Amino acid sequence: MKIQDLLQKNAILTDMKSSDKSEVLKSMAHYLASIYNLKDPDFIEDKLLEREAEISTGIGYGIAIPHVRLSGIDRCYMIAARSLKGIEFNAIDEQPVHLLFMLISPANTSTEHTQILSSLSRIMTWEEVREDLLLANDAEEFLEVITKGENKYIE
Image 1 (cartoon, rainbow, N blue to C red):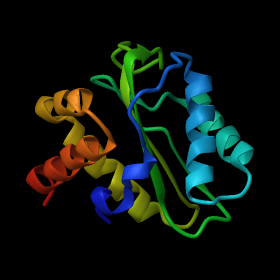
Image 2 (image 1 turned 120 degrees about the vertical axis):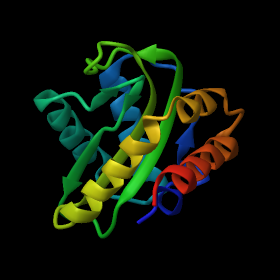
Image 3 (image 1 turned 45 degrees about the vertical axis):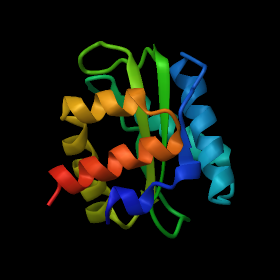
């Protein structure tokens, strides 16, 4: 599955105001549940926070990919967010996070879940992609950068 097919324009928040990790995860989990009509956003939030307590999903370079596999959902769902001021995320490089990609997947889809995480991580290693995402004027431009990066760097 391609990221550009999974991530919708209305699922991109280009101006997260909070710099608190828990608040951001809560806000994103509730937004994800609302746009995809998923029940129990608090459950999604709790599972994401549990996952973060185990080990941060801040992968460095200002990127975090909070993710969790859940029972009771039928497919993968993704939203993205950008924080211009940055979020303290306990990232591996100890730098603030500016770009977040939240992924929830069915409990029984480890291959697809891992493939999406791998593709996203590969795209985000390219500085030009990260810079263009930070400079995107709106959700449409943000999605165009993801699509262009995926088409260029993922086979």
